[in-house]
Image (tube, rainbow, N blue to C red; front, top):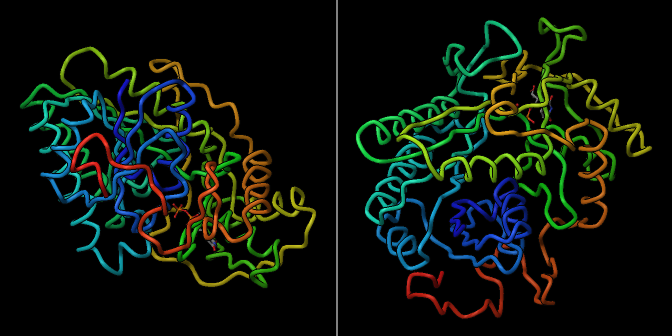
Length: 358
Ligand code: UDP
């Protein structure tokens, strides 16, 4: 398959690129590098820098690379930020996504897999959550992801378009090459590991008194490697069938509380990790746990790495081998990148088309 990964320099996208490349697929990454890292794009995948809102550039690229299917994981994805700046979320996640859909339509590409989120459900009435359960997001992040699902659904109704939306929950772990390096970092596991390395004095537990056994929020963590496999299975599933949008939850069906994550990290790292309870964070549902029965049954997906200890161990190993994240990270070909540089020095020439130069 010739796959375009939009947002392929980010944490989820770059690890999926590894899965696709290892499976022998031809991969092009399109990313604006606003939060992603050029060094995260493994060879022989090609990196093209551009905005998701640049429909013309996208359309030209889809054509010149003769793309068969698109994995779309370019999105703003922080709940807190979305509450502070909903406009940014509607612009990137909805308007940007529609620009990609129109570019695909213009280029005659009609297969898409979308990185969606459990945040579309809001505060679930029951757990584990099934795909048909009510979607009532409680923050702009979830609302914009759901709005884009709506756009895909209407594209499938009005045009020839086969799409799969994967709603997943908390992604964790790392591969040998790629891991989590956000700036600012807000996610629980990286924050906990920052305390283990001594970069922070303590982790903040955002609220207690939630209706859960230990009073802290419960989340369903999935290994980023298992996500890569799911993305590949979903891309393959869009090869044939009726025009449609199918929705699948991806999760490990086991939730862990914030306190359990901290405790497990103490064991895995062998380091003391101080934790302090602070006030609740706005927009946090108490429990998010997915039923991924449908994905297992219909896509044949089987999470293999999503034990909490393994996710923590892999994230910890990546942190120890990449103490400065991606900054000054050598690429496999020996080139070096500085954080903030827009392109790797010596990036191989954009031989395929003018638009393939970033
Ligand atoms: N959390 C926390 N302290 C942190 C970061 C997160 O207590 O420093 C909690 C957060 O309130 C939520 C859970 O950990 O209940 C997962 O949050 P995260 O930001 O990692 O992912 P989200 O569920 O928002 O996608």
